[in-house]
Length: 318
Image (cartoon, rainbow, N blue to C red; front, side, top):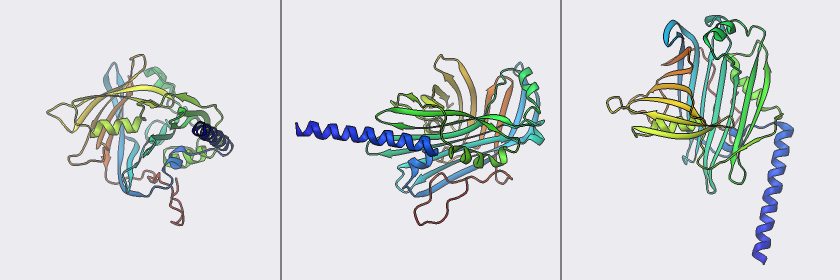
């Protein structure tokens, strides 16, 4: 009887703490990625910057290509015990080289192994894209001169309640662009979530960048990995040809089986970071984005996702 009462008290305490945290998050906003990584000390960091070329396709054939239409970066950080991994990918266009089109996005993830299981957290921001056809894409050119609409998604996995995701729309003024997207995301994370959280099952779920890294580090000829992105379930399918072991071909499908995007990635020999040196991505039937690794660029700084250790100095600007 005493044991049952102790269990009940623990359950009540856990419920009370969960409620308290949710109210605190709603009151001051929160960054679930940095919250998950708090207390860990980064020990290894891998990063790569990219030039982004954009190719417009008409019935699958290249119509024209604009080189250096934008940029991108990717990074992987691990702590000393290899129990915490921080992943991020960001990309955006240079309006001056993309006919005035201002599009950008950033995604951050944390994967932390604890005694109670694997903990997942994510936060991301991207400009809303509604173009589904070549004609709609053409009309979108130069349409963002007066600002645009953005979407912020953030969430975390909890063993007792699944994965909770908050998704909000935000207005982005014309001064928000690829060069200051980290500041834009950090400002958005300081705001309280407006929407109620969407709850998804946590069983066997991983986040998008984590799924991509698992596929990159796997040596299996084929891999299928369900993942969760912005509160929705998808499936990542990749193929690795024996004659080209450093290359992957893949596709992303939704729960109905419809193909949402396709891609090709290439990796450097001996590089165990899981960060590609080349990415070819087709988010729309009329658009192909090619990311080519380059040593130097004028792109934004890549922030560390690990919070500073107490007494270890000021936090890096994000």
